[in-house]
Amino acid sequence: MNNWLLNIATILCLSTFIFGQNNVESQYLSNDGYWYSTGIVKKSSGSNYRMEARNIALSGIARQISSTITGIETRITSEELVKNKDYGIAQEVYSSTISNEINATIEYDVEDVEKKMYGKSYHHVLRLSKEKYFKNRSNKRNNAINRSVSILNNLDTYPTKASITNLNDVVIALIPYADENLNYALNEGQSINLLGHAVSLARNYIDRIAVDYAIIDYPLKNIDNEFEFVIRVFDSKSEKTINNLHLIDLKSNRMLKNGDKGFFNVKGKISRKNSYKYELNLKSSFPNFIIFDLDNKFYSFDDQHFKNQKPPSITLFNLDNNYHSVPRFGFELITKNIIKGFNKDFQAIVYQTVGLNSESDYNKLKISPMGHLLEQVDNTADFAISTQIVYDDFNKNQYGRYVCYVSAEFTFSTNKQFHSRFYTVSDIRGISALSKNDAIRDALETINKKYGKEIYNEFKKTLPN
Image (cartoon, rainbow, N blue to C red; front, top):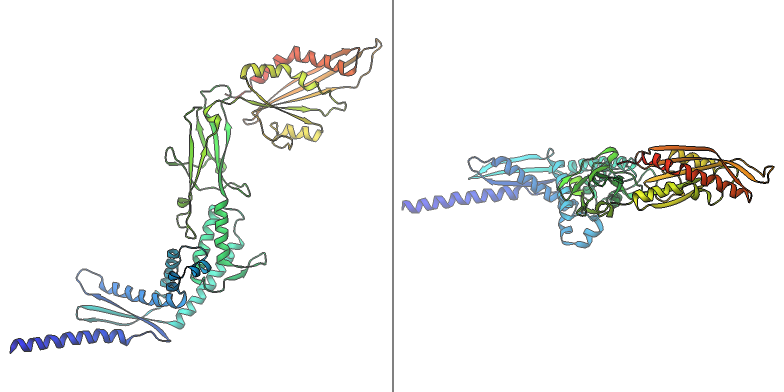
């Protein structure tokens, strides 16, 4: 009899608990004015069950808002909608960003409705005013648009670390409102979709990031000396340097340090084993980038001159700014012994001959001896020899011979820091009974034979390493 009564009592208690629990959940259903959600957690010692129940209730409200406003559940099952409205942003990033925004919006606006124990379970019921939420959402949307417009109007016109980071911030701010009208007229007056524009510009900027190198010091005399080259990360469109990106030497697996003006300086010695391979780590350069998956870029610099010593090159500048034109043979003749010395000591030389016919060209050359400012020169050589030949007009003398006096100025310049050395020969007499050009030839041959080796030895003192 007692056992029968005990069973009856147990059944009644259990029924009361189940009825109470179901009654709580059915009592607080979302309606036109509020979203409701109940968080239920089993009470256990040592656990923060109250906070856990509240978080569950918050998540329940957030899911209702997400389903109502953004249609995330529909997106997950509709790839076409993803393509059309998600701007190519990864779905999990898209959903996570929206959820974070919703949680931040509702965190302090929810109201406690009921906090109560039902048996061993703790129940926490929350509600959120729909009117209040949509008002706050509208304010946040307007703030996001205004901030995004300000960033886009003041954005760098080429990729920088700051400009790409700013575009990422714009996308994060606008994702929660992707289904709404985000068209806006920027400074140029053209109406654009702010989110789509930011995504497109970010992709364009990332694609334009490039890496190249240039040799700035090379052992033209002593092969045991180091060469040095600089690596730059730059915008392939504007050619502007991009600073503070992570460039990794794959051989040492270390990140290179920026040198002067954003360049990375690398030194080495000539060896057939040389290999210079680098990774531009965009993922670590932009760790919070969410717009699309970043692919690191890889570069290999297999310059033959890192493996085998290269012969020096010389550019010959013929400065013909005299009132009386120098004969075509003149510059070749007067530099014959100078060039012979270079051939003997260095075995191979690349020559470029550039004729300058005006005083303005000559002045440019004096400012920049290696010809960087001269459009006539395609590539700057290791060395430059500029030769100016000057003579006064002359006629036959009383003996029927042409007599002239020729002066020449030689300038030898190195590509390294533009070191220069000058040599001048003045008033060298030339004579011929045949023609003016033959008299000039006679003077130039005298200069070449008498001074050529001496001029070369002077210039040789300027050669680096």
